Figure 1 (cartoon, rainbow, N blue to C red):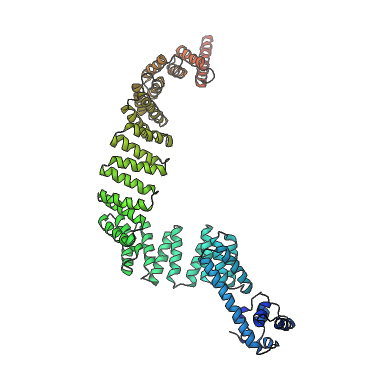
Figure 2: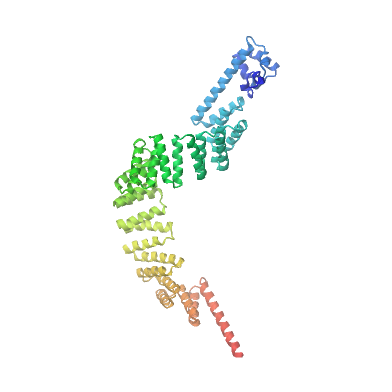
Length: 541
């Protein structure tokens, strides 16, 4: 402290913009005459704010005429003033703890009149604004705090937190690294930095940061657990297991370590050890829902389906709407051969996710192949066809279910959809087979015969294709597509007159729609005219 600052009356409040009347009121103790007299004394010296008195020299402060010892009274008044501000700050902290963020902000803003450079007040105010989602104003106060003390690690950490919230990851990274630079031997600082790097998927740098933290505090089991989980992300299972074991030795009952050890045993295929660790964890932490779930998964891996179902059901008691948990119960019932319970559980899943293709598909297969309730299976298969109309296997199962319910018309339609999808994939062999099944199920399906003809034509079997087109026309004499495609085959063979008949018939039956037939006919006639013209020229020569 410099000699000049020693001569200042009260440096602590030399920034206070509060009116000097606060100090006068404390000294006068509600004595109006005394209040007026002291006010006049302060006015003579030009003291209008607390900072004027606080920043005055001891000599100037002591020159104020008051009954009794002037400096003693002024010092006592300043102490009372300080105590009131401290109490007000404690009140603001209490309001913040009780999540009364608006009240916290009001108190802090009033305090800043008295202590505009107090970092504790600025940080508390910034936190209250952050908790209210007022990020811009929060940033303003944090910037003020940083200007007051650019090396304050708490300020930098808060700026990093705000930057993360605003997805300004570069700013957050810079601030957290600056904290590490200011406090290079602080394991917590390096751990916070590593945590952020993990969250932003900079795993290599995160690994270095965790190693730095653990070199500073080898017994820091929380950081070691995080480092182990990072190693798991990097698929370094053996190294992760080693870290979890070290953490376990540092804190035997720390639940996160037990959970991580159980997880790593599960991932390395040691399901028996995994079960033991999950059970050990759940004895003292029965509310860890994910641990119950993975205990069930581990039991399922060793084919202990009864205990698996029990573990899954406890997880569901804690999270009744968790579809992943419900699905695993359904799968476990299936593995036990309890198909009715399996189906009912899948239905519970669908109450929460009715549009989920996978759930509808699995339930359909249970009804189709295990329970053999084809009518129920059809409900969910039809839903699957709506959710994913491009899945060929859905129509295969629909065909199978309809055939078993003797619903030949719908079975035929399922085959048609299947065949159309194969045609889109240029898989004409399977398309032909699908259309063949369609007409077997419904021999009067003219579209099935026609589409089968198209597939045969694509496969180069034109004679068979013509028969299928003829069959389609026999069923439906006014079928323009079949006529048009017969015209294509005769056109290809050079049978112009026959092709013309079929093209014209297609146009007659569908004068406004059959552009292909009209175009093919025009092209064919133009080619014929060119050929005739060429022949005449040859004869002339």
